[in-house]
Length: 304
Image 1 (cartoon, rainbow, N blue to C red):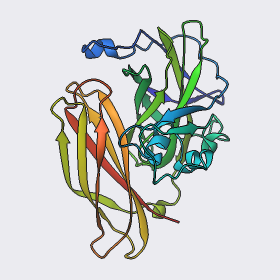
Image 2 (image 1 turned 90 degrees about the vertical axis):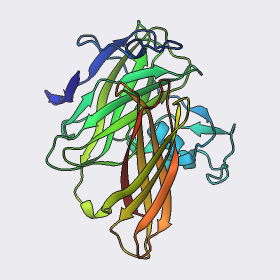
Image 3 (image 1 turned 135 degrees about the horizontal axis):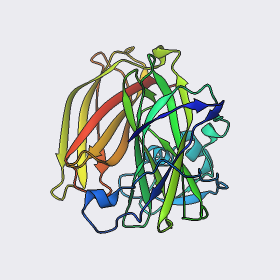
Image 4 (image 1 turned 135 degrees about the vertical axis):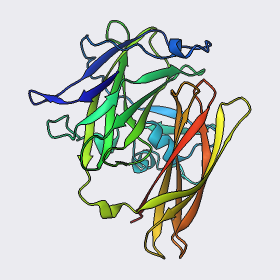
């Protein structure tokens, strides 16, 4: 079911769902996803609490920031003793209570309307919960900084936890869409309820901040078990030769039923040469079901 996030009576609408116990071992895709309902009381906002993320293989400070809906600077500032370029597996990274970049974002009537799918949530083997939802921009203009706050709790609306779902790319063009993701560390209530609301959606007023990009070639190599995909793309940027650019590649992994199984932002920083082409390579991982396909999108901006 697709719902339009709209403003009613000057207040931001909130959508509520209820989830059965998420899957742990079953391979039935229908049993693995939440079954949303159209009635219920929105879960209250929990008191924010910081926690630590244990670095896994292939993770960077940037990918961890996206995982929790932060800007990279937010996480770097919270970990002054950690060199983002020298992280090792097993290192603990402090995740602040709430993204500094969203602390003052109001839930107001002037948000750009965004169409949101209901979150589809999956429990991973470690006990944490991944939630994915698709945001569609049906406006005539591009929007950026689209953020959705997802709150989960038990049947009594206690044991509350909230996370910001963010997209791997910053901008959604007119008529375009992005898959937002949020991760909830364990423990997860069993069973659990969820609610969600749009908290940020800003019209893009200066498109010159974004460099025109095009994926010229791409390669997707899915592992034998289907749980990992290595992606590579040659991205053309129509920018200023000699300037330093930051390129983001969005990798959305889907299973045979078209359900999102993984979201990853892969980042590269380079000085733009006369060809304007950079190769971006990385991995995307499935939360459970085998990956059938991976969709790639690219975005680039000038670094300051």
